[in-house]
Length: 261
Image (cartoon, rainbow, N blue to C red; front, side, top):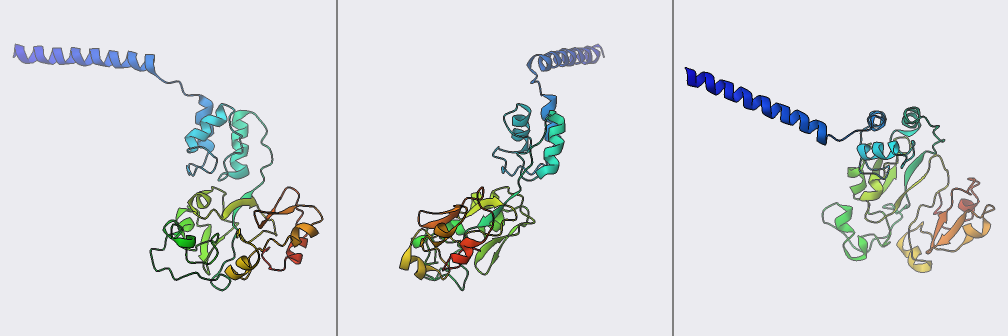
């Protein structure tokens, strides 16, 4: 009986010593967490999409608390989240211009010519590694196999008639579709802009015309006629500078190929 009592006392003593050691150690080695980080993190939506440019919401919260990131850097939360974070940080949130993804391609089943028939797995990354970067004659076209659709957590992009199309009302500018697209034909543009170049073809003249019925052929008519000098032909394709564009529509009217929506 004395052995049992002694064993219990010994175990209790050991447990007490270990408890004290762990308690002291936790105080000595604990990592201080900025209260602001916790408050900012509570404001963020928690999607961890990376659209802000950071690894996730925790990383963004830490950067905002340190003053390394803007209070309106979360594209998913938008102005509502920016306002809450600005209150935590004691600053004023600048007006946030909403941006949405846009697919620079109109190579639908009707418009785009085919270089060959592809019968493999319907994945853009696989198809992009094939000759001519897929079966469409345009080597810079949206492949239309939906890799971007799978990447989007917000059901904001769908394949329609062989081309990815973004729903502006659902898009939160998280960039998941942009990162997933092997053809790099998707970019963020200002929300509500009426005129966009629906082409990424880098060829010109006859080659571009043979690839797609509505391809940009780098003729420069849009550039020559734009009253705001807001559109330029760069690398054989028209590119709009939205800071200068006032949506007058001259570029779309003058485009002989109707490649500007």
